[in-house]
Length: 410
Ligand code: PLP
Image 1 (cartoon, rainbow, N blue to C red):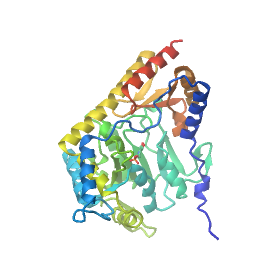
Image 2 (spheres, rainbow, N blue to C red):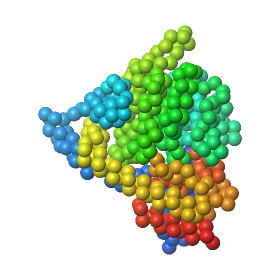
Image 3 (spheres, protein in one colour):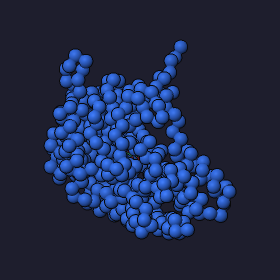
Image 4 (cartoon, rainbow, N blue to C red):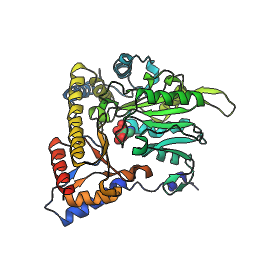
């Protein structure tokens, strides 16, 4: 008889976006004449850069001839892309990594979700709250999270982020073995300074903690004192694994490509106290469970580093950041407190008039016909907040803000 992995049964279905869709559909049915503006789901709207499209077309043509056809590629990615990653994302920042520390993947969700495969089940996990849900759910699936009580897992250490601590989590007081940090942050759009990140690296070095650093939004950083990579901090190569994605950087949410850095210096202990390099273990895991990202996609990702590719991607990011500016400034004029949106494509709004996240959602939909994401959907500390994304169209952002302004002035 087959037995199920019961850890999966502990997870409630992920209701957030289906609950939103249900409410929006019900409203649309009742008010078919209303034009709803969606600033909720974190998907991009602008097309892939022309340089990426051109590279992908060329790669498709290579597939059409026996002499240039590519079958299975290296599980950890083609060297042309791994080298381009090193040359563009790390070397210019003074970070020296070896090519076999780069693992190309089909997006950051896969590796942030799968990295726990190489860690023992009894590690204690620390997370910020609110949080990108994959970090917690994947640990629940692995049996690391304990039991869920009032929305919190008994074996997970939560580090709340709110306006009281300016969205900077304190170092955990309890013992943790692995910490997930995401900067620029989804959902709050807040960032971490080099000085603050240094504290985390020093803490990890002193306490034998591994930091899982999700840098999926680093391309949105505008300020010079905000690190793009944790490896800008001395010592981080001993304690940190870092995740990158072309999804938000270059519109690859549908094309699928990202990469993970697993430095050879990062180690974890066996029960017998021997230290094992995680790079080797991750390579073994990937070679067994992953068969590489498609050649065509990797050629597209490589093109994001060409001079034209870089320029085109920068323009798209500037387009989204203009949306962020429009929303930030509009809320400031309305007297509504916001966070983020300066070095990240997310605006985190403190709900006005003491409304809960869902009360604000309902009122915003009914009064302004605008859809966003209730902050509480990202964790208990998100209650009383609301996320808007900058990934929409500029005209929609302008119209949405005009409607919200008219509603709140009533
Ligand atoms: N990490 C964070 C913080 C995200 O918000 C997302 C996507 O929304 C991802 C990772 C996954 O991105 P992808 O799998 O598209 O690379």
